[in-house]
Image 1 (spheres, rainbow, N blue to C red):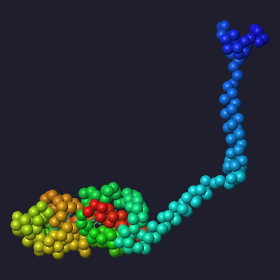
Image 2: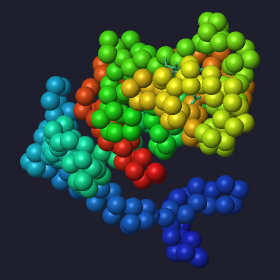
Image 3: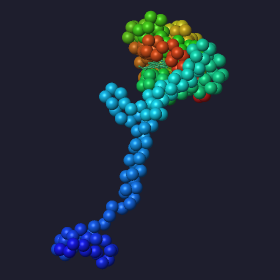
Image 4: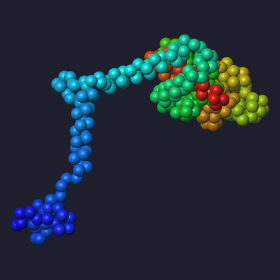
Length: 291
Ligand code: HEC
Ligand code: HEC
């Protein structure tokens, strides 16, 4: 075995090991590797000096810059709370007309209202507030309890047929089950009600005179002479094309036969008055955008 042997092609030394005539070259580690090794070590040392780095039991080396991410988060949170406080104060104190007129505040109301609605209301009323069978759409059309933001706020606060002591009470009587009307009378009034939206009050009365009579005697007290609804008792408009339970003959018949007492939870305890007001302003804005 030669003491020093050079590879004639590359000029490098060999390690002196040989396997079946194949010799291993003794090539040096590339310089770039040393370069990175030294730079990263230097970087590490400088970082230790300036930034928080080494844990020391219950504390740690703070570094001469005194940087602390917890402080950064604390400062960001304080700034966010300050930004929120301004528009939240306006919503808490101003009336709905003032809130609606302030575009900056409304921008925040739309964002916060959308999030609140998505978390609390969308399961029943749909993500875009357009409603589901048995759960009213809130974004368009007449509302049973009134269209003003104040009325909407009150409905959200106390609920409908809810456990709240001031709950709104929506009691559509069970005319068939409780024996108030005969089957034929219910059939007549159901046909009349179904056609109100299609043929208008006069057209429906001409087609179903008996139904119109039953309506005037039994239903107008709550739903109004013209069937346009009454927000005082939460009786829906029956002459528009918006239905909570459905406008087909069979569904209207069921509504009259067995009555309806929809349940809307009270949100006073869960959301608090400010969030409820934000939701009312949000829905009012949504309804103005989609009349
Ligand atoms: C005591 C008041 C009252 C009387 C009287 C009354 N209603 Fe109602 N009606 C209501 C209320 C309140 C609702 C809404 C129920 C709910 O929200 O769950 C309603 C709902 C309805 C609905 C369902 C509407 C929909 O959107 O699906 C129909 C249909 C209806 N009433 C028809 C009648 C007819 C027909 C009569 C007369 C035979 C009548 N009502 C008498 C209060 C009344
Ligand atoms: C568990 C299902 C449910 C949830 C959750 C719910 N609602 Fe309702 N909501 C209802 C039902 C059902 C009615 C209709 C009650 C009736 O029959 O009159 C209603 C009615 C309403 C009305 C009155 C509509 C009218 O015609 O006057 C408003 C406003 C309303 N909800 C807003 C909200 C808001 C805002 C939230 C979220 C904070 C919410 N609801 C969450 C079920 C729900």
